[in-house]
Image (cartoon, rainbow, N blue to C red; front, side):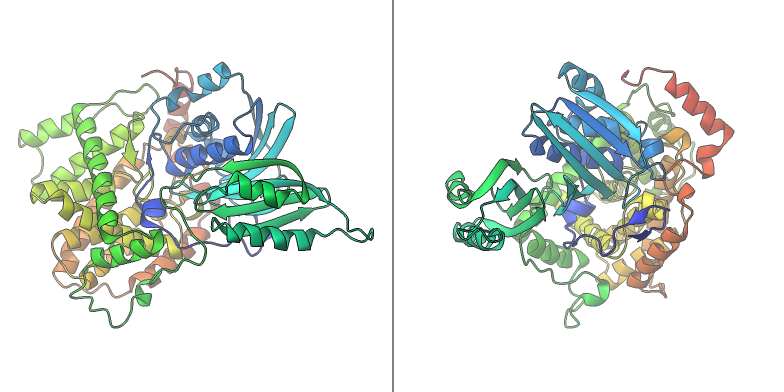
Length: 553
């Protein structure tokens, strides 16, 4: 164990990390709530915890480390709401999420939240102790940013689970001794079990996590193993229970999968970047990562783009929600824009309007697409949809631009993170701005080299951006920083299209962002312990909001 950059201990070596997916890690999830790393991730953790208990939950103890982000933000940024929804079996876009605490009471599930010193490996660490009829399990899970999760421990045993496989957990009570009374035959039985499961052609990976009392047999597969296969294999060992944990990510993983590249400098040298668009490289990447056709990749992105457009329309129509700082302001901007009372900045005015619309939908518990996070969900969608509408682009053309943005996001998350809790807002709005810049160049039929140059310049311009939410809510200064990210993207896209030199390649900028972010004091990384979060006005607004009914609309 060694010290992490946030003051928390980190696990030496960490868990194995699979290549990111555009649809798992970058463009998505489709969700409600203020924060993807708090709310959407908590929903996914809760759903896995529910499956761990077979749906039979009576009590839940939720523990957060005092030095982590969740100790101060779990209530105001939606972690409690999302976790409760997941424990009830809901998804991240369920309209009932805002009332999940009341639904837990109605379901007869007792909950307790404690701030506790325990070995937390990440600022967003959840330790759950779950009790049901004659049953108790403990799960330690982490939200790593943008709605992505990792389960690191079950019942004190290290596991590796990201919600991208069908996970079958066989809880072992012990293994029968050999006939000679010698040591147990665990290894022989395990080898036989692997053979049986592989013969069934359903198991991708099988891992044995042992303890003195027995252990856990973890089976990762594309679908759950048949009960017949399990029964045949498990007859030879003592089994206390079997649990089936369904995947919570849209794109499943598989053993031994390979992607064509993970960095810009990994793109094959024989690839003609001037003739192969960035969106085409994105399709190649996601087809390999998700084992799907190019047509399926494009269709999925078109579906996501339509949700983004719906969010814009909902925001333009007006939103209402009690527990938020800002009143609806998008309509006012639209009126002044139509009346010619604003500065004429061309396409940027529509993008700012759409950014505000999406951010207000997020703050009113409407459905948005985290791209790459909920805190930065305005910049990229508003830029692509706004520029697309101005140019009368088709849904397919805008989806291709979004795919180009998705590939830039893959480079960022492969080399760093989308978690503001780890690297500040540069990892959210900064990343979103880089992605949007590449998308604009692609929408304008610029080259791959130009798109990557635009992304590099945009990310350079946002290095060091802190995360300091006012009143513990992902609303202010988030709206302004999303507008800044979108504006920065427009400028950098034009500079790249005009042939400006980015000087520092994107790979090096991403590595620098990671270094800069980890050098930030943890008070400036979404803990609400520094920056604008601790101003007198922020504290006053927080006190006022805490005196209102959070479930009102």
